[in-house]
Image (cartoon, rainbow, N blue to C red; front, side):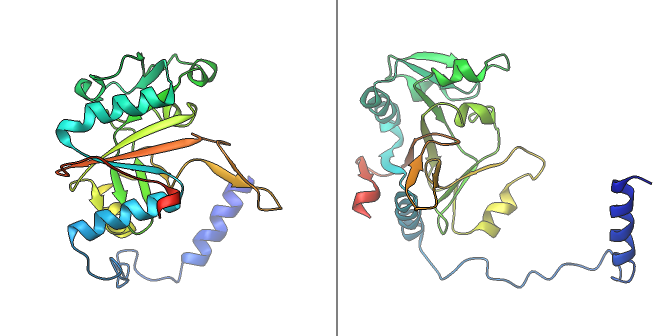
Length: 222
């Protein structure tokens, strides 16, 4: 008998008296904490993103291309990784060379890419979390982990939810989910924070919706 079979046997014996497998799971927990308007929910998302040291921008739909172009230019990126399903008009205002998301791309090649632009699956206000699921406008997980600068576009209001339970209802657990709360970071035993350890050093989130003017929020403003 293998170790795997031995462990699974113990699990089966432990569950033998657990009752009917069809018994529904109790889900009486809060679905969100407090009541908020849409504006308050989006403001909370921006605040929590900034608290995790993401840089947050807001713009109207017709300002999106100019906003992305400006962010890439400010970064000084000569190349930008592009998921196959990213709307081409999003990059209409950038002169950077566009690098298509390809299965053949190596980590070394991606490490030389200046920026990556993606959409997202959902954004969670209460936790300041962006979730990617590998959709056409997000691409393979590695293009958002290797380049040092990630610009993520969130459509407001359709991609914004208040809580994790609400987000889970929208997500397919069989897809490659990446949960992002701010740029990649870690701390050593002295609590010295180091960013860019296992993902982008800089995360910029663009909340695109009916806002008439572009505004920016960063960690220093929260």
